[in-house]
Length: 368
Ligand SMILES: [Zn+2]
Ligand SMILES: [Zn+2]
Image (cartoon, rainbow, N blue to C red; front, side, top):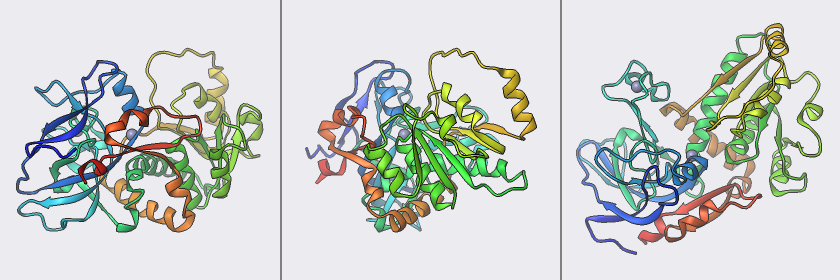
């Protein structure tokens, strides 16, 4: 599948058109001063990609009909443009997904594009910029984060981990407003984001519980127990019953199933913080006793906050923590990647079995 010199292979979609994802090509870009050419090795697939493939959202670059998919990439620097000091060819990197709005708002101008005030930010593979499911791309040198060689096998987990890094940072910052130390944490959902959250919170020294609806002898449940966390199968033992006495100090909602957030809220302890990380389309009405919710949250100093995307420092923290995971949990980390498919069979990455965790498209194989 070696491409002509002016085109590279890519997975492209037509925004708004369900089922349009296909193997195509995009123009090869020139390396300019201050930029680097990346050879993409692997790209993880997540719910965002699935929803873009369903035509629910996604925006092509201005003036172009198609969008290259993919935002959870692991790549190698292939060529360094003039004036780039701190990157060398062969270096493993993770490209940053979100880019600042132009002209930059007060948040974006401080590198906090994750807190963009205008909504005019762009995101590779999602909003206005081609994604990473292509053999190579050119980006500004300051839009990549270097990765140690030891993460060459699992570095595509960096970007989903950045989401958790920011969510945990925000949750703990709010919890720190109180006087106690966080001890018990809940993660809702044993998907890729949830499981990365489990590893992170275990490394942070918390007693971690995970709630999902797979049986207690399923691979996900076993993985959770193997890192010293507790698994709750909500279909047999409801979360409310399985929650420890005193409740949770920190809860991460990682399912995007909105009704679960009220149940997670009910399991918080005094000074507990619930951080929401999933988004949900459509509508889902619920009968909720808002008087009880209001009273409990007030009397127990509780908070519910949202968290989206990540800044550069969350990428750097994610690289450090992913390295710590590999050291501490060994084979558990690559085991999070349950499927690796070649670029030509990218569609398989979207057919997820119930026990599957993260599917990855091995883009680099097509280039070799
Ligand atoms: Zn993603
Ligand atoms: Zn902005």
